[in-house]
Every structure is written in structure tokens, then in C-alpha cells.
Amino acid sequence: MTDPMAPLDAAYAALKRAEDQAAELITAARLEFGREIRRTRERGTAQAEIADHFGWKREHVRRLQEAADIADGLKPARATNRSERPESAGA
Figure (cartoon, rainbow, N blue to C red):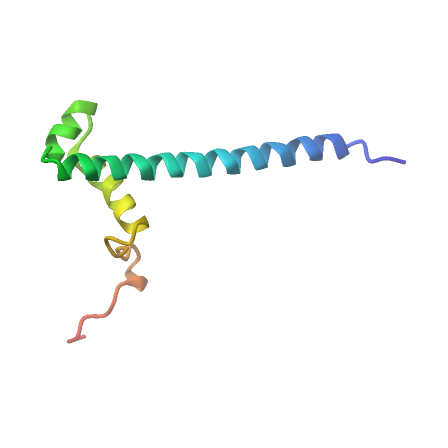
């Protein structure tokens, strides 16, 4: 006897694969956008001007560029968790 849930399981697996692929595409597009922000800034456009163009805060623009810089090895990743931060020399 065939499992009546098998078609549902297969459809769910296809959905999960599509969601994973979409997440990868979005990440790639964000990184490429961050790279274009970097190139635009290298040509002399201020971060604030880019932010104003999109109606964003400068912090959003900075984070997009920073993610691309980290992915491209231009900047080391920052520790985000206290346990990941190096201990100070005096402590």
C-alpha cells in the first residue's frame, strides 16, 4: 500500500528546495548590491547620498557594503557574540 502522505511530502520537499534556492539568490543579489555600493563610493559618492537616494539610513548602506567587503575578503568579520570576542589583554 502506498503512503497517502507521499505526494504531500514530495511537494513539501520541493517547496523547501525552492525556498533554499531563493535564499541563495537573494544573498547573492545583496552581496552584488553591496559591491556596487562599494564601487559607487570609490567613484566619490558619499554614503549619505546613497542612503538618501533610496530613503534609507546610512547604517543600512554601510551594512550592505560591509557584508560584501567581508565576503570578498576585504574586511574581517566582526565578532557579534561576546563569547566570540577576543579577551582584552588585561583581563
